[in-house]
Length: 481
Image (cartoon, rainbow, N blue to C red; front, top):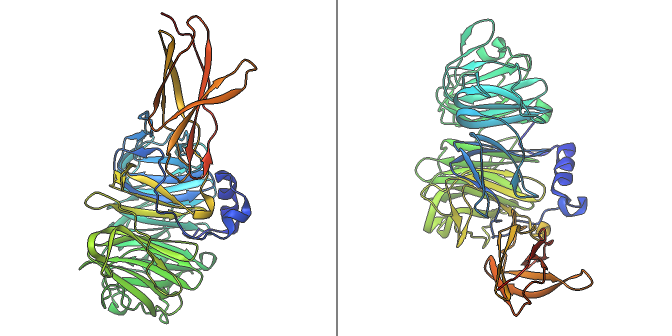
């Protein structure tokens, strides 16, 4: 499956997000507010959308809620943008997850690890999307796996590895290989392709008939004309498409390619080395349509609606094509015009990964906040047509006092894509209907002037520019002297 959405997969995600098909069919571009949701305590290196949510890979051990609650995770997790929470998906990886690809119910994972779910696996493994169970598919890669693509019964792997071992034998390969769904190396195809340096990204196209390869390599099959980025066929052998010659992608140079996104006939490229580049090339010829230089590596690129989103390590004054940008920029795909979209993503390196769904741009990396809002290492910028009301505040509790009640609660699991500007405090009246008795910008509230010995029932709602969210679970409190 390619990094772009098949129609069926897109429809499944629309259903998961709880959006109408009309809202998701024509995204118009991302908000500049990073949604406040659950995050993580370590780097996010990979994001892959699925029908159950976003597969998240990296080096992390704890998921953290906006309320401060937490739960253990282990370098791999499944995150639901609609709720802002992590799905119960018991996958444990002993090491870094750098790559993932989904084919049906199978999630193939790659990276730098030694075990998955307690069983030995060397840098490659497969788990069930529906249950998280480790699957029998078992192939060892001797060297880091940095990218995967899956479809049409095959799994393509790229990275720094120089050999693959299946149940038959250990075989030398040169940083890219084709594996079969039955767990065996396709030795014929893998022997027909050779990269002289790291392969960082693979994208399947044309229903699995074409594979784009990008990376640090200066030559493919000993030919420098196809360095950094190449297009090959996926027949019995890997045949280089000689009609595709990648143009300049970084300040006039052909620099290492870190990420790709294929949209129709447009190939969006993230590159690094001597700063970075965000580039659009023709997917058939490699001709460069536009390219913007940055002061740091651009390591991720995705398209949402009419815009390409370029993420990476650049930051500050004049950092993106002479404009002030902080780890992220928005470029009009058709013209290359840079928009005013300019969220301020923090940390030294910022963004490492991006993914798109029909209604969100998801980002991952080292960051811990955007602007003044805390959001650790995983976040989303919702499409402007898909901003929703926040979810309910959690863990409402009440403390009785003398003729008063003090309420405290936790922030919602998601703000829906707009900043929570206040909380509405509700109290049940004699008819049992909840009516507003106050509001606050904090997560606590005290109501005085109550009658001791009388039980009061409260609930709380969060409010944003999109509207008021649902009420929390109620709590009953009886003030006393």
